[in-house]
Image (cartoon, rainbow, N blue to C red; front, side, top):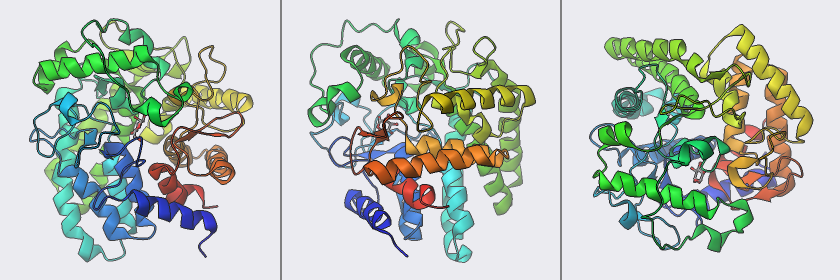
Amino acid sequence: METELDRRAREILEGNDRGGYTVPNGRVYPFQWNWDSAFVALGFASFDQDRAWREIETLFQAQWADGFLPHIVFWRDDAGYFPGPAVWATGRTPPTSGITQPPVAASVIRSLWARAKDKKAFRPRLEALFPKLLAWHRWFAQVRDPLGKGLVVATHPWETGRDNSPEWDVPSRVIDTSQVGEYQRRDTTHLDQSVRPTKLEYDRYLALVQFGRGTGWDQQRIARENPFRVADVGMTMILLRANRDLLALAEELGRKQEADELRKFIARSEAGVGYLWDEQRQSYCSRDVITGQSSGFVTSASFLSFYAGVRHQTRDQKMLAQLERIAGAAKYLMPSLDPEDPGFDSIRYWRGPVWAVVNYLIATGLSDAGHTSWAHRVRRDTRALIEGAGFFESYCPITGRGTGGGDFSWTAAMWLHWARHE
Ligand code: GLC
């Protein structure tokens, strides 16, 4: 039976549906966002499978010829967001940003395929999406893995999806903001600035956009010369998992050659992911590939090692010990930053708040690795947050208060797909 929250979640998705794609939140984020759409598709799948597939198909209509999949698609302009299409100036149709986002789409498609009742009806759609997903994964391997270790190097904090995580503070120091000039932010007209990134962070975000634009969005050059190049623990773990899921789909479709190629990607990441292990911090951490320095921050992304299927007995034990410690310090898992970190800020975006989508990935990984009671704890906490505060962008891990935008699509989607279930 549909509960009040189920109905509300469905209404949010329907209300944010712009016809083939869904905006994360109508005011703060009025366009199509890459990884938001992937999560949103899981939500739609609980009541409309066709619409779920369409969300991803629409996203891939904006894919570039080299496989790159942008983080925002500006299907229609909207003055309520900055920086809009004119600032990015990628010269594409439809207009897009020039950076990407965590590649969750293949994992989502595998999940949609698994639940498709009428396999015959969905098979052509799977056949059509498969090469596009593979092209994006190849792009990561060819353009964003300069060390050849199967990691993902992010060239903008926005690519990681964890915009203002403290992981980016030190690597961002070298970004020259002197040419950024005057601009008017829109996010702080919709939301209180205490929950948003700072002016210095925004200056740096824009300086990196200017850098990309200055290269004519030459992705090879950006990957070589961009002032910010960080191997992101989140994107790396998510891609490793996505490659495994795409491999399962390749096998399903009988694509032997592609399956072999994916096995190589997976083997490379499994061998290379140790680069992100910070022995001093006893955790997986993002690492600056320009300086070789580990961020030293334990964030929610650190716990995606389980989701990636990285199995390493001693490191897994250490990560579980971190989890236990953090569970003792925060009422609700999983704070985006270790609550015992001096920079922890329970309401400021990716420096403390809990995000339902990250919880879903973490819990999926914990469950797959056999740590079911931890997986349940993460789901229970997510459910309690949504029941207590509604469908917010994120939540304070101490009080459970909703932070950021309301009526948020991916939170509604995570309710429908995952958090509401026992
Ligand atoms: C913010 C988040 C990012 C998300 C986007 C739209 O930029 O940090 O992860 O994709 O908003 O919801």
